[in-house]
Length: 110
Length: 476
Image (cartoon, rainbow over all chains, first blue to last red; front, side, top):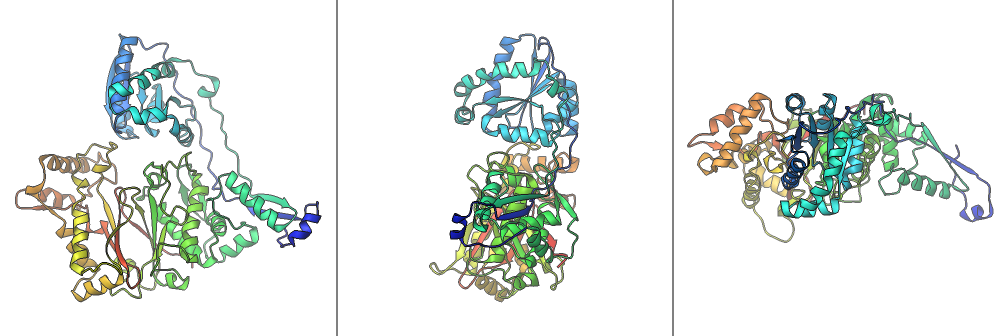
């Protein structure tokens, strides 16, 4: 590596590469994480229990009220259960909700 | 995001609903949590936020999402969704930049680094091996030592990587131990770095240095203490800024969602306690460190609501010790988040108890000292003076605190909302006629530093999640 400051006017006259600045990578290495696939989907939602999990940010309840009504109209045999909690619902709540529902709509997240 | 992935891991199809402005953040978070194929339903953010005010307004947005929601739960999986391929690429150790002159190479370097999202927007010093080796002479710690991983993408923070970012920031080797200690504070398990660096609320770090190293490296603790013009203050803050970007793989609008950016975003609020002008023992000594040791205290400062409040002092208005004490108590007691109707983790900032930093200008500290206060007795005064008579709590506030006490006992509460077991009896006993109820969880949540010049201002900074973390400066 060469670190010299040349006269800029000389550079204009030169077309060849004369400086090689080698720098160290500042990025933190990320340990590779095993990737998991998502769960198999259902063929349809008829007769299924649909969990709506909302993180409680203002106005989200208005959005989900409309969604709940529209899904009931679209799939009358499905039942909808509403939940509210933190972004990460935590292990114990996840296990409980997984017993109560077949699928989940999660958010609105931001 | 991690909650949605928990449900997926339990075999449940999930669709994660997110406004478009947060899609990059959501995809990145899904990768960080090991499930890159998590299905999203994307809402038009431009309309969602403005129209969520009532069901009538939001109805067209919600109805337009129904097909996405149902499809996300029923559409068969692609091969990539079923078995996602690992995208890990080991980063190259060095980057070579060729040009016809040093000036051109410097320009190419700076443009490359900002294009790669490896810079801060300010000019950078090239981290050549020679310069990084020079930086590493500032610490006895091994370059390969790992001090932790940095969220959101959990990049590994080695001493060498911190040194590389410190070179880029323009720091000097003698600053490196302070930079490392500050990062150790931010990576402490009691510190919520994820919220500070990624939330839409535009929070920022405070970095406050105590002990002999502050003077040795010429840190400013007087007039202009959070401003520009001091290499140590500014480049220590800048080194932390770059380390958060590069070790955490953080970038505005991608996973750093601070909507208006941050106050002092490049260098943060980085200053030293004015120990020379303070009548009291240094802050770190009051925590049990030795006077000859140095320490760095880190904290988070509120973004758009509680970043910095001037409480008195200065060269214009007259003030007295009592007038400023009154403003301090008013500020603390007016903050009744601890009584917020508590729901576990609900997105209600008004239910997260506050933590305060008061920076007291030396004239006031001298006057308070004359009046018989030291740091500990002033902390006690503020804590006791700001307690609210039980009779003045609304029924909803009583219920909020009762819920918080119950949840703390049951462990069903986020750590920053928790009342620790040793403090629970105080709150339990205060909830009765004739008693007074604290508005902060512990006196430690009212941190008092002396800094500024003559004249100076006393100011407050506050936040509502984690308390202040102090780390000893090691390896000098």
